[in-house]
Length: 462
Image (cartoon, rainbow, N blue to C red):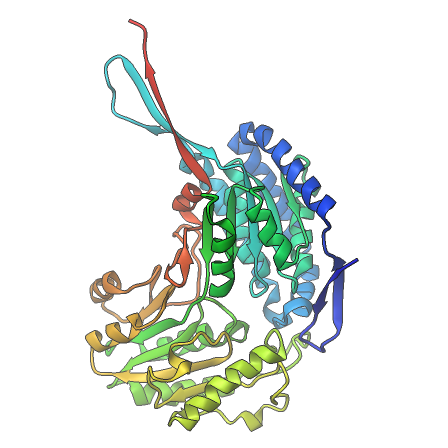
């Protein structure tokens, strides 16, 4: 039997392995989801919310265990890993809380002799394909809205984080979710595509690479499926002349290097007003150099390994190429003992004297590196921020909220931050433009993507 193997980036050992689902298991799971969905859709929203909140409580009780599993599966430092479960709780509880309001019928102005309203009805079965970098947060963004809207859900997690799928489903089963409503499948890419091609699901929520999103669209071609795709990012930050420089430096550095830079909405390029440029670099470099690179199961580690050695070498190649083209590297990699080519343990890096002709400033890195450029004014910053195939988030640091909003209106991005970055507020729509994807999760708007409108036009007897 073919098996899925999770190779831990900590020490390259096999952390866990699971059999890949066979054809019978796949079809049985899909059939159970179909059978369970109609009754689940009829269950009152308040009862669905109680099950969600119960599952969240179960996960919070297991937080220490889940944090250790996150650490070993994908390499996040144990000092930070448990925070993901807290983030899951915030998002899940919020979406459960607003569901009744967000899913309520849309009432229309009175029309004599008629009753008219629009009802939001579930799509059917939702296939959620989740990545490894934030294995619980990215999954819960799609799972909870789909369930609350009355869909059945099948979760296919990354081969790197199979335990996360199992734990999420276990949590809901422990609190009594009906059989078949929420299940997981361990699938390879080919079988996941076949599920979509064969017409066995009604909605797909995918988080991953642009190439992966393109493969999902190809598989869904002609099926008229509802697709939600959260893809890549090359997110910018702009430090205006009036910014609080100390706050900006601390926020941007954390936004660039948290999770070893493996975040779709992490800061990968920074534009600083020329009057603050030298100050920014002088303050940022020692902050970056302070990271402690090490095994993520060591509580003192603040920078863990990348997911695999090839990912780290990809980022190293970007940096080396930029330096060859004239960029200046400010961090001495030799000061980080574990950093060496062919290893997932990679030193952080901050580059200046960069330009958009370099890959480091336009190609997604997904690693612990950031390029910093000086700009003359808002217009130059705006042009550079928009000069990207991606558009997930963009951050502005300024004391002038009105100016920031004006700039934000012209930014080609899904989310505009002011004086913060790299954060998802569940009350706001999580969405992207250009190659960062399509569709939306979270907020009341997110429910529109896991339901369809059904109109009722009732003529009353006179």
